[in-house]
Length: 244
Image 1 (cartoon, helix red, strand yellow):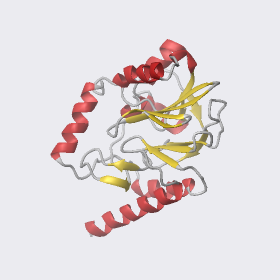
Image 2 (cartoon, one colour):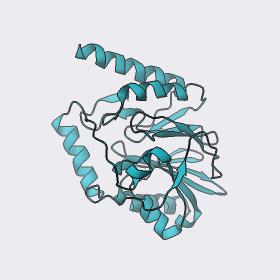
Image 3 (tube, helix red, strand yellow):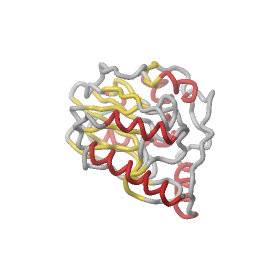
Image 4 (tube, helix red, strand yellow):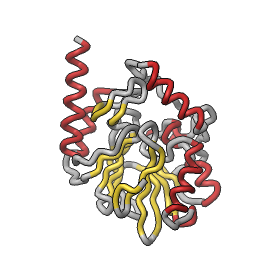
């Protein structure tokens, strides 16, 4: 799905991954679920590109619905897979999140489960080799992606900002669709290790001028980073007030 001249999404509002496409090559942001590898190849074929055009993949955090096809991509092409150092063990299947998903509704939960099973989540393909990131780097990859630390959802969560694509890829630092209850709109993501820290990390996005804010789950958001942060904080405050 083309979002902009250099910007593409694969997957859907349940689970998504992204491509920054340039004449020099392609950067993959997140790898969704293992079965989305066929979606990646189909999208590349549709735009006249191939796996050989990919220069690297950046994973926003180490959960199984974000590492997806990354190990298969690395094995078949040899491209580097970048993960923040605090999530390297999670991406290798050595650590797991113990956080709760929160309020559930049967329809959206079954939809997420069915899609995930169809796309291979029951047998995640953990990474065996990663390039560890600190945060703050600008990587020598197409689109000049900048790495922004966003701890909270997981210790090593990051966002990735590409000025060329006019986009910031936020992983699960926030979401526009709750995968378990179907609620849409900017909001904190479920399964977050430290919700308070995740809210604090939103401040790291405020200085960016990106139009697109692209989560791992939910519809692409084109209202800019300032509005995305404001709306997420408001949703968190409303949820906290409702719980009192």
